[in-house]
Length: 122
Image 1 (cartoon, rainbow, N blue to C red):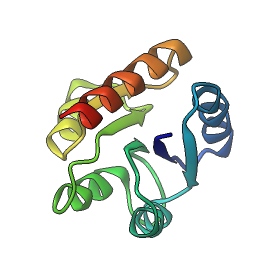
Image 2: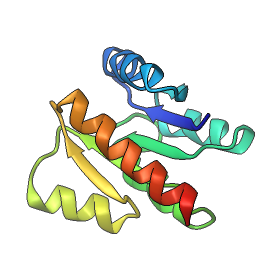
Image 3: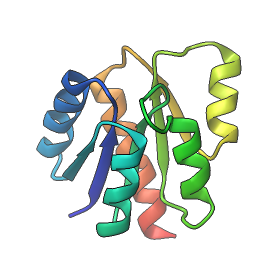
């Protein structure tokens, strides 16, 4: 079983993502800001992070940069920011993929499965 960290300050989005990914057999860990995300990463082996950009305490860009200093965990940004600049900034900060909100749950699952497959077979 693979562990996925879902980090978003919108609790409804976190719960919806948890439902989708739990049905796929993933173990889900929830964080609602960047500080909580770091606390979980220190305690649990995480195989993929779904990360919102706009969050309190520490934003998703800073979380991605800090994670990349020590870890190659796949990071998929989930954001309402849909401008090219925002996508480029997210990817340049260390994200492996970028999905804009609202998103199609089936596409999210496919991207998660793809990233997990690449991370665990290499």
